[in-house]
Amino acid sequence: MKKICITDMTLRKAAEDRLLGFKERIELAKLLDKLNISALELPPLSGSKADSIFVKTLCSIILNTTLSQPAGLTREEADAAWSALDKARRPRLLIDAPVSSVQMEYIARKKPPQMLAAIGEQVKYCASLCSDVEISFQDATRAEEDFLAQAIETAIANGATSITLCDTAGVMLPDEFASFISGLYEKVPAMKDIFVKVSCDDGMELAGASAVRAFMLGAQGVKCCFIGNQAPRLSTICHILKARGESIGLTTSARITELERTVKRIHSLLGSEVKDNLSSVKHDDEGITYDTNDSLTVLSDAVEKLGYELTEEDMGRVYDEFLTLAAKKPVTAKELDAIVAASAMQVPATYQLKSFVINSGNIITATASLRLEKDGFDTEGISFGDGPIDAAFKAIEQVTGRHFELEDFRIDAVTEGKEAIGRAIVKLRYDGRLYSGSGVSTDIIGAAIRAYLGAMNKIVYEEKEA
Image 1 (spheres, rainbow, N blue to C red):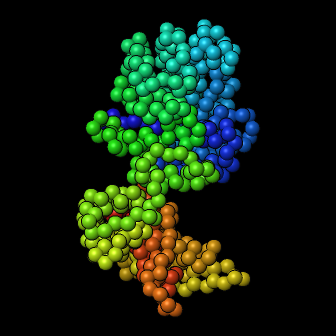
Image 2 (tube, rainbow, N blue to C red):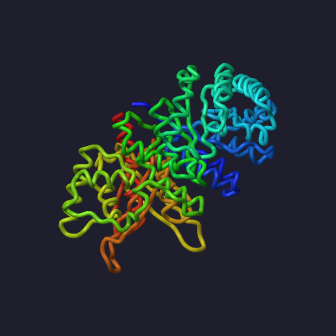
């Protein structure tokens, strides 16, 4: 199976359109990093201190994804880019090189011989700074074929580790784009030994199809964007690879099972109704119900859409509990979520709740004192928080010395009346996976604490078994 690497350009486009503030751009980058996207393409540096601080901040928090920083066509631009990027775990310098006659003349103000010289010099200099150098040939589909071939050969000879071929105009049909790609592979044999990516404008909504044709001919990567039409949507590419990847020998490192939830969060962050081609995002999950006529396969798909990766044994337990409830009433997505939390991966409790005391009010800061038992020994933790539940969760972290990302927290009423029983569901994310726990009590804070411990105990158990 050939792995397709996905570069997301949303951060760059958002900066161009001035859509997001500093905090929102950081949040967007973190969301994409959790999806295990291959690379994030950053906006060019404008020379402001804020730009440099933004890149340096990403270098400290992005764990899985390559950061691709535009390095211009001059040494000064390359030095500035590398100065901001050099502490990244996976740094890449990106050179944008216009290669069509129109773009060379009006954007770079260079004649073809001058552009070839600039490409060679800049690639060589960037390669002396960084081991990962990409050159993106802008408007490549409208370039003179012989000149483009020379430009590719020059870039490879001077140390480029990857090239991107751009259909910037977006006027090629998939078959025409395939012919363009195959022609270059024949004309430039060295392309077979380098990483080739494509970037296709999606103005005609054919970018996904064009990219797939390029993959079949040897390309190994594609650029995506959530904004505008300059690239296909991330969800479009992932949906194609999920639906047909196995049959055509293609896969991706992106976490497709987590895509739907993250796409919704990104769309919310962008503050607009962004068109998306992923079929499962088009409907409202809250309106879907499941009944006894739904098979184990259908339910497994539904659980996967909720973001869980369950073993066959866990899925069997979930299905048994589902059938019990479905015999009485249709089961909603929210109720299915609760079943997963309560039924999947039941493990011995490493940490058990012995007692808790909560102090909270409208004129005091909430505090929580918890006593937990582990291996026969009791340990107590005391913490402040933004409300009683936040304080309780922080007290657990103090006792255990562990911090996990809280993906979701929800309390639902199980019964009615003054003595109503509440069920709390907590989802923790660790190492790219979701772990859920549930707790039931007439005391909603007690239910929340038990739910958090339930999810955390599953993580601890898996670590022991690994």
